[in-house]
Image 1: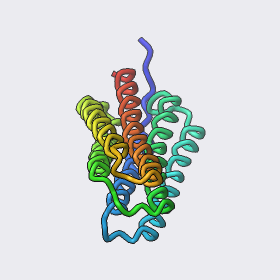
Image 2: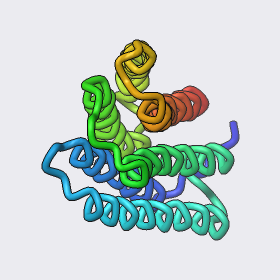
Image 3: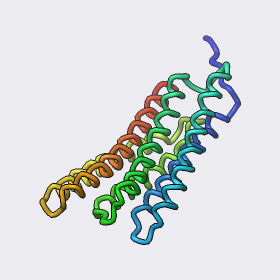
Image 4: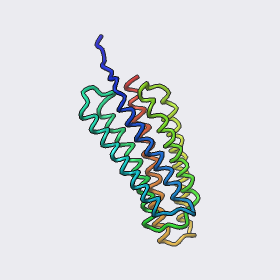
Length: 205
């Protein structure tokens, strides 16, 4: 029976954990952006810095794959996971940027619910990335992310119902709908990450 080479280098797992920590920071900044006392310019500046840091970690992952002979799991899966984590950060950055550019003042309550889901998804993802090394205890992660994504869908529908209720000015509806789509996109991106983790775990089991 052939032996499968298992690299002892833990740097890939460290990089995925680092990438997930960027998402925790991004979700915290997004929550701060929704605060009535938020300095939106300052939060947006810090979000841009966090997004740039996340991009650099993604580039580190790609460079590591390209320079490593034996990777801990399939190269395509590593690329997909790194890209998926980066997509989440991009969507959260987009939501913050839109709130700033559109000068959104009145934030629907459903936005806070969606951001709370994003914060929980970020925490779970950060907790789960180190487990890739053993591939143990990950099934609870993708199950819970799927549950949270379903809850996010429900809040998204409620947001749209609120926006189209006739209580808002047309221009405000357009602005808030864009922000809502970015929040929904970030939650969907988290589910994509969880699906990639599940695929990796199944292959490696």
